[in-house]
Length: 422
Image (cartoon, rainbow, N blue to C red):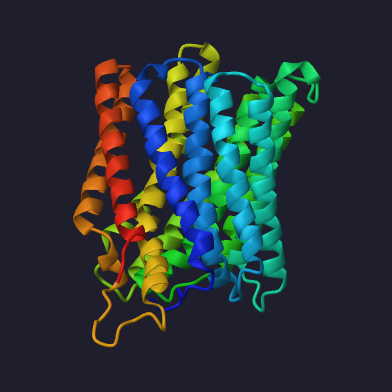
């Protein structure tokens, strides 16, 4: 595909994809066996475990892998350190199970602290790699600034999380309990890391995959300012102890960024050369529309949560983010990026046979499996959302089972692609 060449060795990238797929399977299995967490307080051992597996093991690990591959495309340069890429994987891959075990057992001891330290070391390696790569690149476009800023927000999230772990047992690092800062920790990660990176990478890849020449650096700069201003204002309002209604200003800024980005993608879609849009890109475009669902849920949560009877809305908010928006993007983009990486690994120059014609990258995975994955994922997601709203345990169990099937289908297709041979 034009503009998408492999400039980072597959040995750095593919382990992240593999780890992410396994994490998705583990998270959906936990959800299936613990659907009773709906209605409980969000500071619950199982909820914390699933949230961190989805946020770190699934979302962050896949995005880190894709970032190591896509950074050279965004900066028209190369990834400066393969060694740091390997270190980022090793530290985070070891740290996440420690974190999950600590939360699952609800023990804020050395296990949880070790996991938090290791995850931070991995993120530091990634951040250093991004900074060095951008500094040495010939072009420093707005896309690179999105990625750099997102990496800074990521280390802010993980470092803040580490401090919250140590603060939990009365070390008094912060004036309030760790629970009081939980929403701040979560939103720095959701808005600063995930959303900022989606804006930066999506604004480059969606026109690329649609074969559209549409670009608007001015629009992207506006999006960049709005999303960061929205997050920074939320942090200031929260730390200053202002009324919860002041958060609406932050939400308005972030919502504006989402709407402008949606229009950016719409313009890229309208001016596309490729008229037929494949299912992977279609799912990613749907996820962009789905960005508004968590925002609307958040507005309702802020308005109703003080009444104390709407805890399921907090669960709904988190579920829409991690099992909805982020998962839709990853499932869609996995099979737009990973097949090219594997194809280059297997059929790169010097490994092709003289007689055989190599398959196209899209032939490395099963489209039937992908369709089944997408159908089961969307069905399970919609049913689980409905189950959260009406608090129906049978519906929740059925929906979680369908999501588990989607994860099994996804990991099967990922395995088929990863183990492809000439």
